[in-house]
Image 1 (cartoon, rainbow, N blue to C red):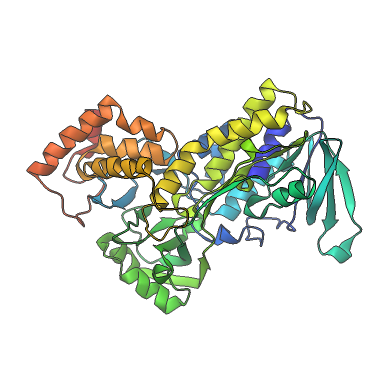
Image 2: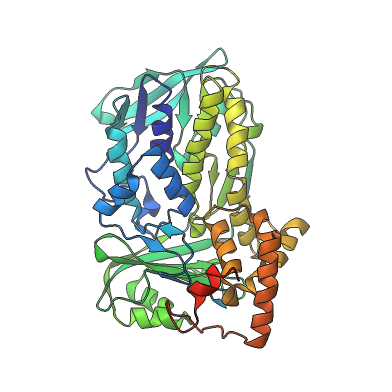
Length: 456
């Protein structure tokens, strides 16, 4: 996704853009080996969807044509947080539940329609053409290697969007530039996913249960295209990883104390095997502090990769594309200073996402990169206090939801209106404490929609 979106932006400034993909791309929205996490539930957050619609006008109509539902968070969804069930209300925040392979296919279809973008698949980039302080292009090899001789391609700007497995730091070190420093925070989260067919449709389009240190298991059950349902279950710490054996996975799911989930699974039939995934560390490669040659930048997961449980990856790639666009408007890509302008801007742009992901992972004592420092512990305490009001305050809930969807900075949670709503919510909670498993149905007797419009 980072490469596709970067190519879209670059096409507005360059005569020719060549996009190279290691995999042989399928002709439709099928799984491919280069995205091993694609079998699992993916979340395109609201900000990411907004950016896609900016980059590809009418993209929402593409999603409609593909039969992708419009899901309004907190009205069409159910969410269990550490303090109980979030109320059902009209948030106005809409996302589209779609599998990663199909979303990528729809974006790639748009990319193929842009005349000055050439997409070449089955090509592995093997190194940089670097001389006199500038990257002049790349070397590449067909896959499989017997399919053709090595090639090279010259370019004014090379953008590495090759993900977690990027080799740029190695290539730069070999050329004498030194590898960028890395920050790694790993809470050892693992997850597994299985597809289900629903005999009776649940009263929600998605159900999300957030793990926490005293109960480190959670997951999501969501509808996707073609009426299919995916359930991804996650656990922090190896002893809590969901098993990949089908019967054991279903037993893991039945052990979650979430009545709406259990009611849905009572009418669900497993379809296919369980797929596991454990590569969930947060990794920040600090290219913003590195010495880089001219004509070369790094973006997407190759710079900053997140624990996927927070659903930030694709939206962070969209934000990176937005950052590239802003930088190209101000600076010529051929300027030797271009990397020094882009990389710090990208680091700032993804800082909030990094803060949210890593501060939550640092709640777990076993996390590599911990323990949490004083600043992070203060953030934990402040969020824990706000979460106390979530079951009874749609306004506090919506502020947290906007932060999750990257529509609001984490610092924006502590504005006077949110704090006032928190105070009102806590008074309500004292008057009528919510039950931890007391789910609120959409359109139920508690007129939550009216309360949101009334500003409480």
